[in-house]
Length: 503
Image (cartoon, rainbow, N blue to C red; front, side):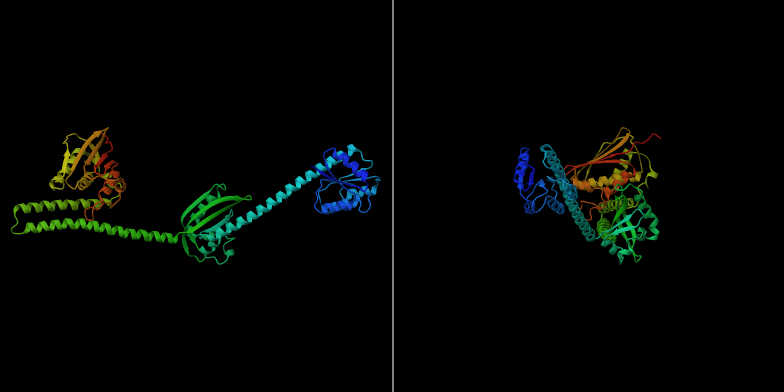
């Protein structure tokens, strides 16, 4: 409810005005003097409107209006006078009285002026409230922005990565503390304000600047660039390797580009040292494994040759020595073949291919194993077939492929199991399936089966090269290999050869 203060030294007029305004629902307060009204306002009492007589004993209505104007209070004052004159009207205007009314007061006129005065007062209060709220928000945003800038500065200066910003003219406009340390600049002025070219070596300048220019040509806020192993130059002309991430953005209509630079020199050295250490450890294991394989074969050969060379050696002993020698020689030959296969390029064998009969090639490999007694304790199941199954391959490579599979199958069955070999043609493609009833392989072993030098055998009983060589051969000749293995139930290797054209 709007609260109106009526000031007049005549009680009858005060009561008459109160009666008129109270009927309209306004809350009315009365004061018999302007000085009393001033005290009430200074004490903090709030009013929406003041209606005051001009001529009163003591402080006049004009003086009261002047007080309100000097205090800059949003409180409209309606002045009423029984003796209107030019002087009092000019004073009312000078001190921003809302309205100047002559006595006797017309009721309709009074209510109209009061209504308009209250509307103006309420509008000013609303505008003032919005202004104050806006100022508070602006102050809060300034404080927040200042805090954010301080936080960003703290973060930028805390990181060990250099953070450098350039404008569209390639001029460095800002850099964090790590930038000066990384590039060894004694003063910020030695870096800020310089062209970004100062960071690149002369021989790499054209390469990297073309990449930077590519970012600058893109639309801001939509372009990022990652550069790895970039050669950068310090102020003392020394160089280092760095990874750089560059982003672009627009600020106040200008385009800027910020790069985060990380020195990776030490990381590269650590990686190289780690690779060197792993390579040495790896070669030590490989050398030990291959050395055991060779020593075992040579020891067996030497032992039986020495026994067969004695004067009392019988024919049976000499025959056994010959078989052992052939067996171990074949083992060394297979090891040598695997080692030599590692040094060949991926496509080195494709130029020497010919159309072979899969059944004939299988028979040739099994004949070699039979003559060397390599699988004499294993039961080989294979149905003899005269069917011609054409495959395009290299005969030596096929022998190496099948030999590795058969040797692994024999080891998986402890050389006493059953190995089944099946060959057929389907949809013009040759198929070869080798199945054993050995110990089988876990999923973990299957995941690593093609890794060079990975083996589940004891040291000296396997080099881990067999399946790696098999993988290299099937890739060389575009052969599809499917492996199905279950621990405790054995393994199946299914080779599917490419279709051979009639030509």
